Structure formats: structure tokens, C-alpha cells
Amino acid sequence: MLTYDTTRNTRPDLSPEPAASLGRALSRSVRSHPSHERAALVSALDDGLMPDEVAQILAGRRVAEAFPIRWGESPEAYASRAVSEMFVAYLQ
Image 1 (spheres, rainbow, N blue to C red):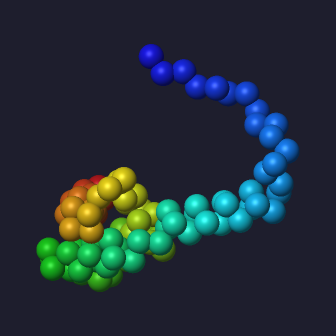
Image 2 (image 1 turned 90 degrees about the vertical axis):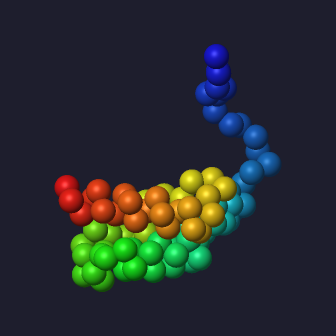
Image 3 (image 1 turned 90 degrees about the horizontal axis):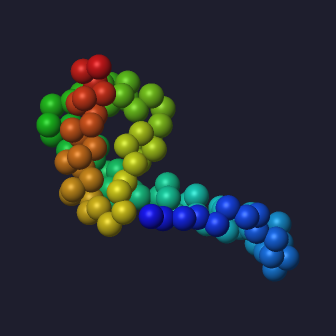
């Protein structure tokens, strides 16, 4: 069984500025996957979705925001899974 320590972090060595820069670095690394997104978009168009349909499915979001990339997933594997999920979203 997993247990988690839920006590509040009271370490004074992480001031607000380094914490904020860490948050910016993490959010940038999570959202910045151009090769994965490009592969998914190309695959979606190759598999028959029209650009306006893809735009409707994404609803203003980036591909990786709408269909999160799994840890260690290659661009090709991500494209295959993301397009499958796009078709499901389109049909709903």
C-alpha cells in the first residue's frame, strides 16, 4: 500500500522567486512537445479528418492539452493514440 506524506513543506530554502521559476520551467516542459503535436496533426489529416474538424475537436486547445502525452511516449505512438481519441471525440 502506498502512503503519502501530506504535511506542508516548511522548508525556508525555496523562496517565492525560485518556486515561481520552477513552475514556469515545469509548465513549459509539459506543454512544449512540437514533434508530438506535429505528428498527431499530420496523422489526423492523413487519416481523413478535415482541418475544420480538427479545430472543432481541439476547441482552441493545443493537441497536447486536449490529449495529454504519456510519459515516454514516442511521437509516432502518441500520434496514433491521439488521432484515435480525436475520432472518438468527433463521434460523440
